[in-house]
Length: 89
Image (cartoon, rainbow, N blue to C red):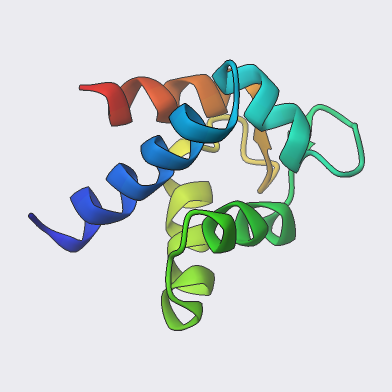
Protein backbone atom coordinates (compact mmCIF):
# COMPACT_ATOMS: atom_id res chain seq x y z
CA UNK A 1 0.00 0.00 0.00
CA UNK A 2 1.43 3.38 -1.00
CA UNK A 3 1.52 6.30 1.38
CA UNK A 4 -1.33 7.95 -0.55
CA UNK A 5 -3.47 4.81 -0.31
CA UNK A 6 -2.69 4.53 3.39
CA UNK A 7 -3.71 8.13 4.04
CA UNK A 8 -6.92 7.82 2.01
CA UNK A 9 -7.71 4.58 3.85
CA UNK A 10 -7.30 6.30 7.23
CA UNK A 11 -9.60 9.13 6.12
CA UNK A 12 -12.20 6.61 4.96
CA UNK A 13 -12.00 4.76 8.29
CA UNK A 14 -12.47 8.02 10.20
CA UNK A 15 -15.51 9.04 8.16
CA UNK A 16 -17.07 5.57 8.19
CA UNK A 17 -16.55 4.91 11.91
CA UNK A 18 -17.36 8.31 13.36
CA UNK A 19 -19.96 9.94 11.12
CA UNK A 20 -23.34 8.89 9.73
CA UNK A 21 -22.51 10.34 6.32
CA UNK A 22 -19.62 12.09 4.56
CA UNK A 23 -21.68 15.30 4.72
CA UNK A 24 -21.84 15.04 8.52
CA UNK A 25 -18.04 14.69 8.56
CA UNK A 26 -17.69 17.75 6.30
CA UNK A 27 -20.00 19.78 8.54
CA UNK A 28 -18.11 18.67 11.66
CA UNK A 29 -14.74 19.83 10.31
CA UNK A 30 -16.19 23.03 8.80
CA UNK A 31 -15.65 24.93 12.05
CA UNK A 32 -16.59 28.28 10.52
CA UNK A 33 -19.82 26.80 9.03
CA UNK A 34 -19.10 28.60 5.78
CA UNK A 35 -19.43 25.55 3.52
CA UNK A 36 -15.68 25.35 2.91
CA UNK A 37 -12.76 23.61 4.57
CA UNK A 38 -9.67 25.72 5.15
CA UNK A 39 -6.20 24.22 5.26
CA UNK A 40 -6.34 24.41 9.06
CA UNK A 41 -9.65 22.51 9.10
CA UNK A 42 -8.24 19.88 6.75
CA UNK A 43 -5.21 19.50 9.03
CA UNK A 44 -7.63 18.82 11.92
CA UNK A 45 -9.41 16.17 9.83
CA UNK A 46 -6.04 14.55 9.11
CA UNK A 47 -5.15 14.71 12.81
CA UNK A 48 -8.39 12.94 13.69
CA UNK A 49 -7.61 10.35 10.99
CA UNK A 50 -4.31 9.70 12.81
CA UNK A 51 -2.08 11.02 10.04
CA UNK A 52 1.32 11.84 11.54
CA UNK A 53 2.04 15.47 12.34
CA UNK A 54 4.95 15.56 9.93
CA UNK A 55 2.69 14.64 6.99
CA UNK A 56 -0.39 16.73 7.82
CA UNK A 57 0.84 20.00 6.30
CA UNK A 58 2.07 18.31 3.14
CA UNK A 59 -1.05 16.18 2.73
CA UNK A 60 -3.44 19.08 3.34
CA UNK A 61 -1.67 21.13 0.67
CA UNK A 62 -1.79 18.20 -1.77
CA UNK A 63 -5.49 17.62 -1.08
CA UNK A 64 -6.26 21.26 -1.78
CA UNK A 65 -4.05 21.20 -4.88
CA UNK A 66 -5.71 18.02 -6.16
CA UNK A 67 -9.38 18.78 -5.43
CA UNK A 68 -9.79 22.57 -5.39
CA UNK A 69 -11.48 23.00 -8.76
CA UNK A 70 -12.39 26.69 -8.44
CA UNK A 71 -8.94 27.86 -7.28
CA UNK A 72 -9.98 29.47 -4.00
CA UNK A 73 -7.54 27.29 -2.00
CA UNK A 74 -10.46 25.88 0.01
CA UNK A 75 -12.39 22.63 -0.28
CA UNK A 76 -16.15 23.08 -0.65
CA UNK A 77 -18.75 20.33 -0.29
CA UNK A 78 -18.70 19.39 -4.01
CA UNK A 79 -14.91 19.14 -3.99
CA UNK A 80 -15.04 17.11 -0.77
CA UNK A 81 -17.54 14.70 -2.36
CA UNK A 82 -15.16 14.23 -5.31
CA UNK A 83 -12.35 13.38 -2.90
CA UNK A 84 -14.56 10.92 -1.01
CA UNK A 85 -15.59 9.28 -4.29
CA UNK A 86 -11.91 8.66 -5.06
CA UNK A 87 -11.40 7.13 -1.60
CA UNK A 88 -14.29 4.71 -2.14
CA UNK A 89 -12.84 3.36 -5.40
